[in-house]
Image (cartoon, rainbow, N blue to C red; front, top):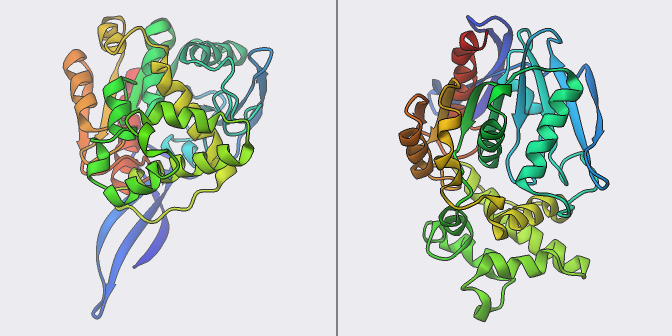
Length: 347
């Protein structure tokens, strides 16, 4: 197969990059299998570090139009960090694009630090960034763990949210974390990869894998930590794409996502109970919201998006024939479209 990258112009305005993958067979190029449309990545015009606690400094950046509609991108994990490609979901001509790396990950400091690192610390950090930048209200965009954090932030500060675009709904419930990291869930779909995931854990401790991994990821021996982090991250990376490929994650780069995910999962995301987010939906039902969900998402299955849409009937649920990764073409297209469609409601 070959990839052809071209510049296109959407009705919305700015140039976007469209990557079309064409099947090459014995008769030459055939029809496009898919099309991925995201905006051209612009460099930040403003960035820095914000001291949010005695321990933590978080990285923040702004790109796009300084006078545009503010939007904040909340990455997943917890612990994944953001990348420059995340700017591509937003038209840089009309959006003031704010991206942060949450505590302990990405460019934030110190790396992989779980101390003073809870959902409510992150919610407070988002507010500190908003106040620092002098933004009154903004669009909040988040996927996977970022959808959890977006909802928690919106329910805490509804007066500061113009709209929500959510992907891969995760409500941080024990049933969801067990699906991903305990036996009997997604392990049944990829048993061969599951064997690699459980390998670091003694057989007599595999009935509570998340807790067992906690001991390894926070072990005093750095080699033990890094080995466990790599196994954790390899397992999750394999599940993210609609068409999985063999993965071999860097051990040190894996430490933040493995350690912080485990830290949050062990503590139930610091939510009051497993219905906390759904029970507080009444606080945000007036906020324009689009939910984009991959039908075949193995990390954050469709059930949670469905339950959220039932509790939040004003939100629009868009189901895409895709998996979990926001950069897989069907989801990337749907997310760009969701932002374009919600834009008039933000003005």
